[in-house]
Image (cartoon, rainbow, N blue to C red; front, side, top):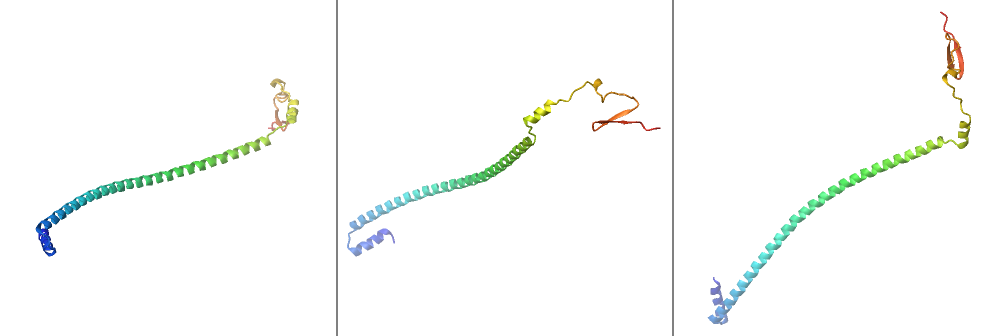
Length: 159
């Protein structure tokens, strides 16, 4: 049943004239066209919002990938910093050990002023080679050996 037929049928039961029914039909048509226009506008708005949502989803996916890459890089850099800190601690430990060793060495090798004066006060005389008693050869057939500060004469074994 068409709209016009239906409107006539309703109009007969209500006691309306055909002009009134036509006027109501025109108003209903205008309302219908207005609603269809509004529906089209809402559909266009929905499509625009869906496009924005899709773009936001793509952007969010890219941001998540960037965030994942940034977190991975941060973990890598944290590992590098940890390794650097360990090397610094190791070098600091080596420096501390070296400083302590130098301190111990310098303490064990310290000479007081009195000991230096005593050592320098009695110089050992330096003689030229020809004047040295150890270089003098008194008997060319005898070999002189010097052992612990005293001369020991040794004779060659008898043949």
